Image (tube, rainbow, N blue to C red; front, side, top):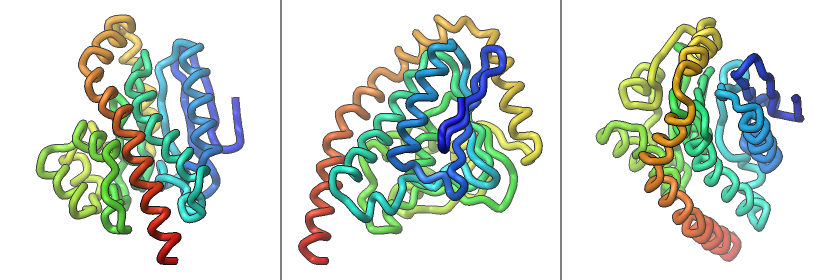
Length: 240
């Protein structure tokens, strides 16, 4: 299955979702819809999922053109993106994120929702840069960072918009392992094969048990983050 920006392929019990918009893999409303559809297809196929990007970028985050226009399109995009983290975390089979380059903002939060994250070596930057561009860190974003990062890295990522290189990102908790770029997809596929040996029912039940509180917090936080975004849009309109 290939849509405009998300390519779905199934090999045995492993589904690969490759995001490729030809540019920076911005998570536009269309791309988000395609990711949701690909996850539904993968779940129907009872497949372990590998999420990856294109060339040297996993995802640059939300589509800034949509954000700048504001209005309901922007709010719907934010809602879909924030809710996607809970969708991936609750996915009943293992999810591997194969990060093939730069990853920013909402791209980071999507990546961190996976069960296992593999990074690749290179001159890449990893950052939740909301504060650097004048945004208070959204609650959902902070929850995702707190879910994965070490305490010190979490503080720097949220309050200082620190840009991590791949080595420091691994130490911080963004990545579970780091490989050479040509080894990224072979390693992700090998990891997926290893995870097929799990009892998938026990995997899903354990995932639900340990993540129930976090997923509930995410879902409760989404309306508050959308309200913040709407109020910021009103302030900009009045001063613009």
